[in-house]
Image (cartoon, rainbow, N blue to C red; front, side, top):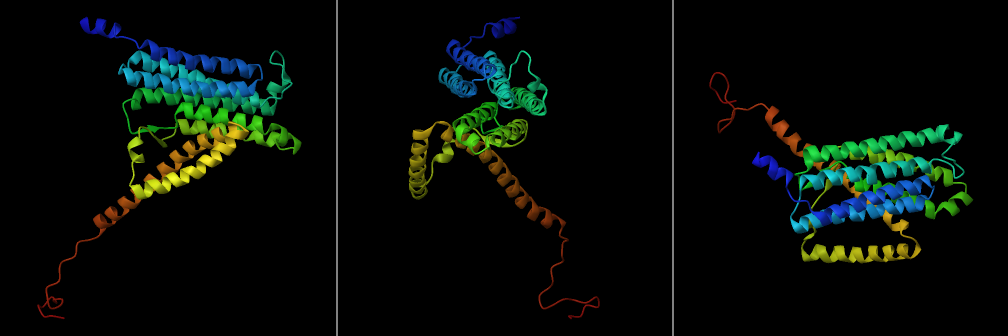
Length: 295
């Protein structure tokens, strides 16, 4: 009985919960913006949700007050902000601007149905990824198994912003529709990565401590990257956000493939050494025949 009361009266981090609820709020207003066909606003609200999702974890670690309530609340809010909101954003992006949600035959067209299928797939994969994390992986500190849902939702949102930025020039060259068709396959790929076994880094800050020779070379490369980022930021945020998101997505794929190939390379010599038959050592002076004479 005392144990039950202790669990029920375990304190709740009020400030971290506020950050989590703000994450949920961003997801809700993103859905509202998508329904209102304000795709750029909807994408920005998802990105703002990532900020609040990072803040609630930071506050919880800072105050050392992780709780089951906070973990469950965070997962429920992530399903809305990084699962349902991006899914609706994808669905609406596949509909024409003249769509009337009250009665529109466009939602029953092939393109509209395709958007709905991808949206459902994305939302379901986000829910499965969060449930798997809470059940099997919450205690791991070295890596995530599967693409984190904030990264998946943020990448979808940043790609929509990129399409919105280039919309005028794309339509002028009659490539706008083809560009929006790329949104569906991208969302499907991100959804699959959420439930895959691809590993993504977590808490790898120690790996950024390197020798001075390598550090100066890396900092010189970063200076060039900084110039490119500055030029992109003078144009529009979307030019920077989507490449950053895809860099993280592709890093997990390349890193996982590299470690799997490295593991196979290490296992192959061991298997060959085990299967190789044992040979009797030859005596000095040459081989010995069955009669005892040297050959």
